[in-house]
Image (tube, rainbow, N blue to C red; front, side):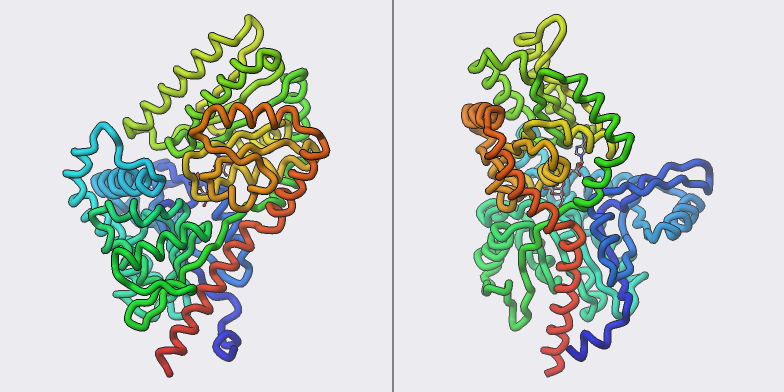
Length: 489
Ligand code: ADQ
């Protein structure tokens, strides 16, 4: 307690993530315009009043010249952001290569990309070497800006090598690491050539966090089976050093969504959409266009539903909003055309001269448009094949307090563990089961919808992003204080 009392009022929190929460556009040799992206992590950290957050990460642009780098650094400083500059080749090998081509599919149980599996295997060592080099570059920037008493919070699979680099600089640095994706079964992790090095590096952190208890358990199993270390209820022990491992399920800033619904422009939009789809039940999918989201599976299940329930054909519409991501990766381009092809086929099959059953948009919606869409939806379909948590399911629930629509949710999304009692849980690979659950959702009594909605609404409004961040950071703080006390004894 004495150590806690001695903390300064506003400790600094250094948040290290691959991408800074800004988009930067160059306007001249030394001029930049910046726009803060209001993602979940940004609003989560705004809620952490006890700490003053600084961001460290890549700005998402290649800036080869010193003049440009200096100007961007200066502009970012006003937003409390500190850039890490990565050249094109590093981004290619570290970000597109090792992160998105190897770790991302593997952690979501999708294996290596089918077509170039051997090529990936061959380029593995060089990509891993660049991954480590890039992580070291992040560590250099953190180290340069670190002051005694700061807390460092590293995010996601891009930065698994970072905790080790940071502790090599300064073993008293308080370092936490949080994974936003699932951590897979140790049997999957075992197939990674760099399996041990990555685990050992993560274990250098003082606190390691996951969305669910299952992911934390998989991580501990990987450490016991692959490294031969001891797993305890608190975490993993290695020669007397305990790395605390725990579940910290993320949430959303529910108040931001609930209050947006009251704004005149959102109300207006809700009215328009209601009019537009009058006489039809609205089903909604909102996803990044990614293999893990199970978009083709979702659309095939909807087709099966239409096939088996002819009376519903002109009474329901599926709106699928899919933001393109990683568009330069061939696997993602293939997914886009696959989805387009299935949608075209189904619309050709079940559409009429005046209406089609699926509206598919390849783009993102602005925040207010998204809120209005969530509010007019009768059934939301989240069919991720694997998903760390899935915030879309939370956002839908937050916007449904008047409609009390139904959430169909994949059992392979982390959110199934928190919203499972209110949602209809499905195996997204089982198209027949998903089609049945669509019928169940569309015909559910108002009473049951209300009961299920309340269950989820209570959860979403009480387990917020702010609370998540606060819990992680305060536990990280305490964990390290304990560790320091131990070394003093
Ligand atoms: P994502 O895979 O990006 O996040 P998710 O949690 O659903 O998945 O968050 C997506 C965010 O993007 C949501 O806030 C959503 O509103 C927004 N979004 C998606 N499609 C959109 C569209 N078409 N238009 C506008 N906005 C759109 C990763 C992990 C998740 C984990 C989060 C947070 O993969 O499992 O829940 O991080 O840890």
